[in-house]
Length: 463
Image 1 (tube, rainbow, N blue to C red):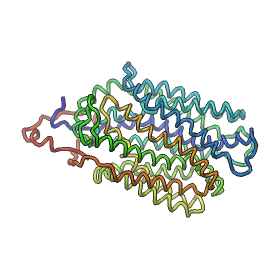
Image 2: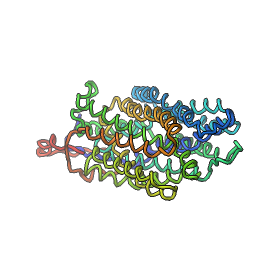
Image 3: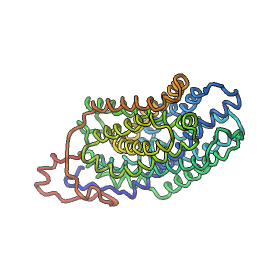
């Protein structure tokens, strides 16, 4: 039963804790995205000879896209599977445990295959590791909306991203300490050490979550607040478990998915070929410094962006963030060295943070309590299909036009995302948030309503 006058309270400590799953995911991904393309190119040269024309980027893109192809199929599958799972570990923790442990085992084996100079086994280990990551990514991300009422998800998502980006920065720091050098012909490089460090950190996080986070207990505790949150949703019509989305909400969902697709089409190309661009165009092995600048700026921006979202709304926040990213990437075209790019990437990181705080909550706004994992999987279909395609497309484009087209490629598709956002039409509603909505409490409380509360309740909604 939805209770009038219920105060929605966010347990920030709990959200911070579950954010460590995202910490592990982003730390692994930063290590993987920096080293693996360089390893692939080295192994291809070792086995098939130097292409002589700066090639192999197309093949590298294909191999890097393997996980995204699997992800398009597996992420929604495991998201839906976790929606229906019922056991004493919890519907999400079961997948976090199984997929996380498999990832911990497989990730260091990628480094081992590089050390022994085995190209085909290297590809096999990369493929298996990415399948293992797909087992638990959707369930791990779905934990936040599982236990957070809809009006508070932007703040909760900011906290999760804040914790996650600490992991990303840690991964990037490892890439600057254990640098993979182009002129190092010894395959037993010190650059393999971050794979083992990352695996140990992941193991510690997974074990700690298993011991400390009692998912079933928390879900039951949050049930009244989740029901109240449905009343304050931004969807055009209220989302019900036994009813499909309204036509306008479906259109909004497709628009958000399209914008997410375009964002990742641009961003993943920068991630996949950034280290290559740094070495070939800037003459530096310190590309990770730019990632650190982006991550640090994101960390600083996540929490202030909560107030921005409350003031101008999620849609306008995403558009503002895209504007920051587009302008900064455009300016990057004219910067000839890595030191000049650091402040540019800081601006881009601030914009990226603003986008991320609101984009995922806009998607799970369309979910009921019974299909959050499924909708999370749909969100990943958009991002992963973009990454699958762009790794291949960008690789061949850069082989054809040249890696100097690096920045323009990202600007074009970020701009396409911005255009799509103009067509998103949320329900325009407002409410003055009370202090209790941001309080750090263990559970929601019920306030005895007055007659005035009852009469005015239906007019009270939230951004």
